[in-house]
Length: 395
Length: 60
Image (tube, rainbow over the protein chains, first blue to last red):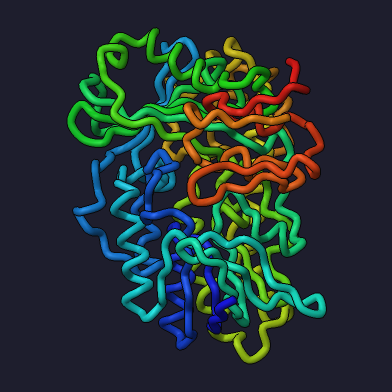
């Protein structure tokens, strides 16, 4: 078997992996980035909405090539669609901004990694990790059909939702049923939508999740849905929910489907362990998706940058003690927030349509200057105190 | 026996990441299942957004 040697092996060339490879290489490491697919960014497994405010953090300049739409804000619809809560980008904590084209965006990020000196192999899945005397020494990669050994001081697991590399290494990223959201999305053309907003529908149309319309330009949008696994009984139910919604909305029904996109996201608190000797987890593989929004691109990119930088610093001593700096940074940023959002997600997913309609009615009429969980709960408490009892611990 | 219907599968990996015992694998073009490790929980069958996975032991 052929053998290769690197300082850092990054598995998976999504945003998290490419950023990790880029910043490890920029800081002097010899880096290999491997991707199992034959093309970076394909197939898309994403709704493609991102905010604007974090791109600077990962040193990425906005490029028109990967922007499909500029978004002014978000609209959230009650189950009966009678109440609409409008959030400007500022009010939504800059959670909205662009709808991007992941096929171009992901390639752009991978190109940035290569620009810094990282090597990139496509059609190269990791088959298993190499362990000697209980220590991770690299991974077996099927490089364009041929199994080869890649030895590395540090592995960065960026293999996305699958999160297999972490689990091979004995790091627990197993998800509970309630923390899995199954998704399907259609890229639709010839539909009528307000192109300046992203649109979110909640309630029984998407149990435990939500339904979204993210504009991709004139009369085009990603129309998708996520449903929590503990609410799914039959195989293929998620697609049926989406088809039903489209059937009931004439502005969508008249359109055509250009692409079918599927995937799943984790909606859980930050796992206990994100590093071990010779290994670090980033992005979706580290379960860093926001449990309320389901957004993961920013978190993957930022965690990727930190992992790459800290990996380069720890090459002399790639122990978990040295890599701990990364875990601490990630937890300082997301542990509290994701735990709170997970808790809110859990509570929201138990509310019936009638309750949600009442809640949304209050929120849409109140002039809430700052959209925060706290501000919303206080407004609702004034009118329907009985609805808030459940959430009191958050106030 | 478990089956992944290639006519439906989108190769997204939703099943792989949901498997609590990590017995599934998405290779370059398809999903592989190590049935010896499978605990028959049905997570993959229900998670698959398009219903591409079936098993003779599965019932609602």
